[in-house]
Amino acid sequence: MMKICGPKYALCGLVISVWGIFQLVLMGIFFYIRSVALVEDLPLDDKTFAKAEEFYMAADSGFTRNAYNCWIAACIYVLTFLFSGHQFYLNSRSSLSV
Image 1 (cartoon, rainbow, N blue to C red):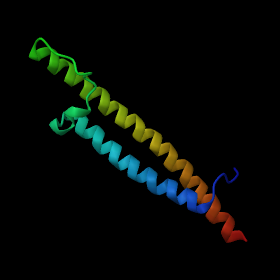
Image 2 (cartoon, rainbow, N blue to C red):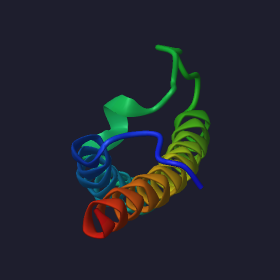
Image 3 (cartoon, rainbow, N blue to C red):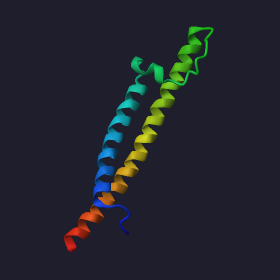
Image 4 (spheres, rainbow, N blue to C red):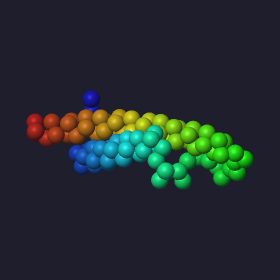
């Protein structure tokens, strides 16, 4: 496989990917356990709910959806991490053989 990016860009991709994975996995966990601190990030669309049960059902659905979205984004960061790691490996291998 060929090099697409240089060693500094690959290292930057590795660092940002690690941070993204860490942050999004934690946010997904906090959404999944229904952390009250994240209630403002729920997609409730400023609706007026007639009953408390309607609000609780909408909030529960929003917490679950946001948790899954965070975990999907963390998986995309894993792919970015693997790509950056591969590019870093190719750059370090080519600099050793010169």
